[in-house]
Length: 442
Image (cartoon, rainbow, N blue to C red; front, side, top):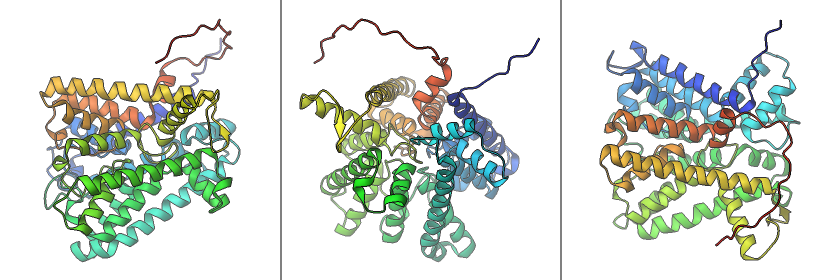
């Protein structure tokens, strides 16, 4: 009698791939020589750090600079790089390096992993993605190196430059600035124009999505030829950059000089999408500033990018659908193209799931920690959107609260729908069409 082979769906492979990477990272960070004070880091703290790095979040319970040795920091940056590119992308890259045959199943899995529109050309697209990632991170590290080498000397300054380049591009939010003041992030460089501009560029470029990169490669500045997804990503990204910048510039940090105020507003606009670095004290923000930051964190970057969040395309589709309803249109359309009704259904499901998990988790943290709901909501939004910004409460949370944040980070990086589809059996049969009955809306 033949044994039945266990066949995993694409969604299950993606989930288990990230789980294995998290466990491996936790094991490596638990080694005695991974931390500066041997035995000072528990397995739970190593696990939290591994989840945060693999899910490119940046929430930490231990200061990265002062806790981990060079080995530990290398493990963290490797986890960030693999997490940013995606486990499937990295495994396919190794197959290409080893000249292994890449079958249709692997190509289909890669398509699902990076939200590509089709299987055809997926190997070429993977090569292009890896080339752009490597080139951008190297150039970002080189561009920041004069400042960091000036401040820390050649070897350390160069290492800091490339660490922060990878962290910013992968929208991770990890930093090594804690030696002067633990958990200080990039506040020491709030007035440094080159560092601010380079980090902002890396964050935004990493978050616009691989599909948009490919459209630029094929069509350059001929925007009319871009796919609908790229047009939506670029137009909504511009709006999410300009409008929040004006708010932060006009309503926050009013005591700063004009130049520093511009830099602060720019960084406060870019970082929540979804890098997790900060140049100013987030606790100094007004309630309006906190609310806007939560909103930006939950939106995140584009699908098929290094960023997290509900994704720009998800929120954009709901906005487009709403305006179609307002204009009494029968179909959802944008830029002269109809939006697939299935995309509208998925967008509504994703937004509902993220908002419910974010608010329910915030209420749970509020009850466990006896902290204000606003503070807890900020932390849960940062976790599920894989941002890493914090109001400073993460290191002091109880174990139960940290477990909630780890779950949110993992779900946010892998994707809520991916986790649900992996847990449920795939529906291979065709559904019959049921009778239609209207439900009153509004």
